[in-house]
Amino acid sequence: MKILDKRHDDLLSGSEVWFVRPDHLDDVFRVCVTSNADPAGGDRVPVVIAADAELGGGALQSLVRCAAVGLDLPPLYAVSVGYPLDAVPSFGVRRVRDLTPSVWPAYERAVPAMAGAPVPVVTGGADAYLAFLDEELKPALAAAFPVDPDDAALVGQSFGGLLAVHALLTRPAAFRRYLVGSPSLWWNERETLARARAAVAGSPAPRARVYLCVGELEHRARFERQFRSVLPLLPPAMAGADVQGDFFALAEILSGWRDEGFSVEAHMFPEESHESITGAMLSRGLRRLYGYL
Image 1 (cartoon, helix red, strand yellow):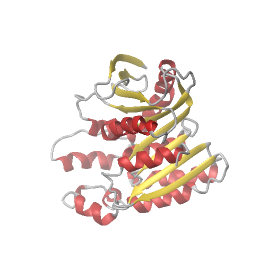
Image 2 (cartoon, helix red, strand yellow):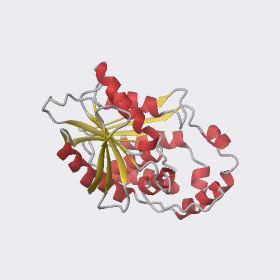
Image 3 (spheres, one colour):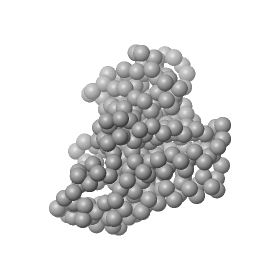
Image 4 (cartoon, helix red, strand yellow):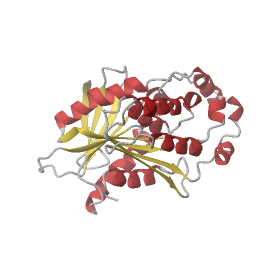
């Protein structure tokens, strides 16, 4: 990984922004780093890495700083990974490439139709993206800051939640904690649920803590109201998405891993939707994962 530029964050004092070009991906990423740790403490501390910086990075950085005041979280570094603010195509297109675990031609065809314009979409880049996070970004962070790369958490919501589940199933040693919000498990005919069943049946439980969450308002009736005008254009697996049903199915599957080094907790937040859940997910999820709630 090549670090192209380092800057001070214009939003939070003591934070840095890196612009990096990974070896695994031909693109530039914007990495925001902040911490509530005492810089003179001397000890290495956990690191929380969040995909989808444009959707949740600011909330993560603010929470980590504020929670330190009330001793609601341990000393840690918060790292959000996104794209340059002027990136073309936009982050909405790039995140589909990087956060989805498989190529799905039906979705690639549907997006331009939904947008009413030719918007080329590439899918299936999650493995390369996770290689970047695990093999390139974590070592670079450990070289620059007092973080423990062996005590890393992965945070994601929606497609980011799908990525976090995929990481748990395919790179179980890469992260010790997983905060999974409203995962898009409908992706490509719900293949990730099938992969989870196979992993639990055929592999030992990883050493990990998993916190799953979903919003009370993420039900099919609301989804159908939101997307009524484009439902006929969507792949059937997406048009019939059942975020809550898939969420509880995943929780039940993962509970089949029984080992003292593995734990999974599932929670539904009242009065939260797919779009509003981020704050509650980060606050409750991180405090549960680090034993502060």
